[in-house]
Length: 267
Length: 245
Picture (cartoon, helix red, strand yellow):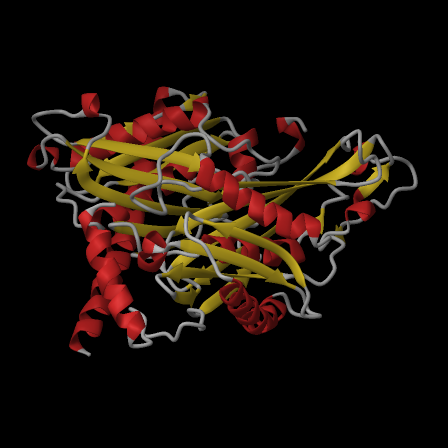
């Protein structure tokens, strides 16, 4: 660790002892969230999400292809994340590295395991032809908490996605629908992330908090209040009580964020 | 589709999107849109959406790229996977490497590189939505982002293209015009001196047509240059207003 984060760590923990954070939030509150959908014309679905200064753009492209041999009755989802050098002085160009791959996989799991996209409805001819959904996550400005921003961006973008059946009509079999239709979706789970610094648990960490954090926990909860995915990161550890605390905060914040998401996609 | 199938320009000189031969597409520029970057710019040019971020001057790595006498300018042009009709595989391809190179060279001419020996000025250009003319849009955005980053420059570089469609020389080719037109001539200039910083052409032009197209593109550059300056003024006025509060 270089000298600057050490000084910042000191400052952040001193504030935390007084129950404060560097940007004036309480431990449980999120920064301001903005969601804007349909921002890229060429994409079949897209969304720009801002959480504080963090800014993420997610675009969805749809293509025709073959299903995986072990799941002939399901469409294909593919998620990729790029930590492009535009977003931070520390990001470098080149093939995705650990961080980008972890981010893409966590978002992918959130979308896949929650079955928010009804992949069975993406089958055209079982075992032969299905719709492939590409989720591409572009980080534009990195000020912490990419997990939540990227997940929220992916959900907002998917919710506005239109399957371009008309454009592919010549490659579609007889009798299959030739008009564009919305991507079949169910209610999405919302990811909320907290970090631990000393004994303090802070939700929605900004960059300065994130780089000094001991441990990180992401919890995705659904509209019924059930847990749908979790991911712990970094070297530090959580106690059972701390995990409970994160789950509770994830449920409370998740509700609010879900409302925001519905507003932005007009539901 | 064959190029003869569509009429790109009608007998009255009206183009597919309703523009006349000397019209630019709609351009919107906003400076200082990113928090982490030293300077940034968001630009919409017709259906193009481009964002540029500048980092630096900072130590050039790897070290063998350092120049002991001056800074290097490293532009990186990248297209988002979802910015085009058929998904583009992420990462650099031959086209984007070439565009990155010609943009780097164009910018290097205007930046006062001798002030920062061994340093690198990194310009990242991300194309979020593409509709013909992304290199001009990217370079124009990069010019504003460099100013926003406070990089000392001789001038604010600006780019614009002209071309030929249906036998007529026109300004700023749109998507179909680029795909099915006869020629495309993107140029970048330093508007104060009129020096040409970037010039590429593909297609077929007579010498006479080239001269017409060049003059038209030059005029386009000056128009876009005014929009750039306005965006920069707006940025600094908003900063000044914040300071006064």
